[in-house]
Picture (cartoon, rainbow, N blue to C red):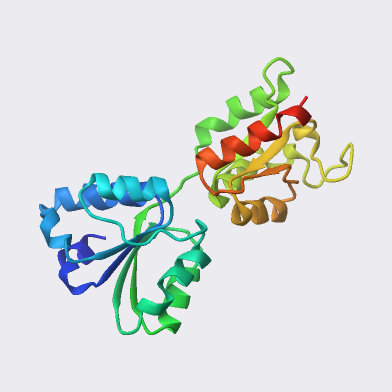
Length: 223
């Protein structure tokens, strides 16, 4: 990230895929004493409205927000503008390679920088298990806003969510019995399903507000 920011004048496009990535971008720019005006020449693409808002709050105008807030839609939105362009993609350490792979096929030169990384919060393991096992505190719905949150959840609970054990009914781990699983979008849903979890609710708009609306719409069936 630091190396890319020091040569930011060499890039034509900046792509940011989350608010975390934007926050890291501004933090490192400030640390390196890189004035915002050095980024003014960049064309900016943001994967969703919250990311766009965070980017513009820092002073850069966002030109492209894809119709759907997933990597494939980002590529489609930029398809006609990538030939010979230098692109800086700031993203999580672990992420799908759809954007850099497909943009390179379109003739872009893409540099991928790690803006942040997600880590498993081991301190959450005991309280998470306690909540799920307590009849008075068990949630009606568990929300997942990314593939990493799904993987971390399964990693924290291990076999206790029912992997490798008999289940009371098809498709539902015993520890999550009668708890609905809500996903922010199809990519997260796919990861949940790969991990053996059934998705009960999926947002139509892949944002936090969209996820909330999907849960509210399903409330009549949650009891």
